[in-house]
Length: 78
Image (tube, rainbow, N blue to C red; front, side):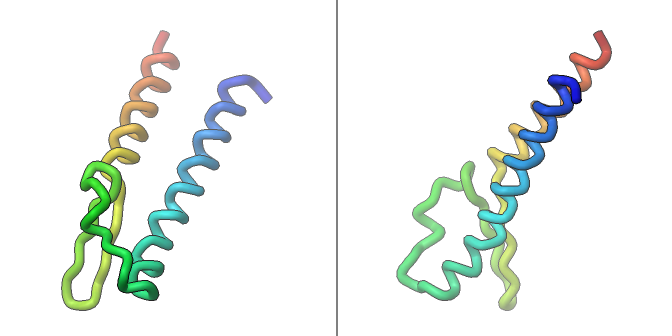
């Protein structure tokens, strides 16, 4: 396996771990009402709630992912 394949695999694993954490956050907040998501900065965690539906994502994670993909594309073009 080449070095870029190992690096891409590691980044993928990191994204999976962060994704699982983001999935767990709304569940934890529902179980423990004393935890307030509003205290977390919006750039780290953005939460949308409507009619019992809760969606959470990380704008920072999305930005990092896009920048990483651009970096990979630029590296591949050279």
